[in-house]
Length: 87
Image (cartoon, rainbow, N blue to C red; front, top):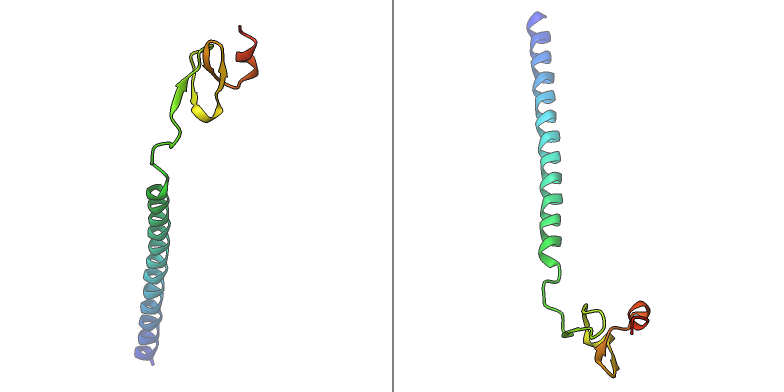
């Protein structure tokens, strides 16, 4: 009878060890998946240069996209109201 109890205990200890290994592997796989997703998101960001050329504002000397500038007597200026009040 003692041998049967011993083998039952060994059997359940092996099952417990397998369960612990399985949980560890599942957590590691989930961590690897998150890392891969973060790496892919980093690689998918748009690193292409802007299509609009940058122009220096004639009033405040700040570079702004050409599409947002306005033509003034002194040249191209930004469309900012604070800049318009300068001169």
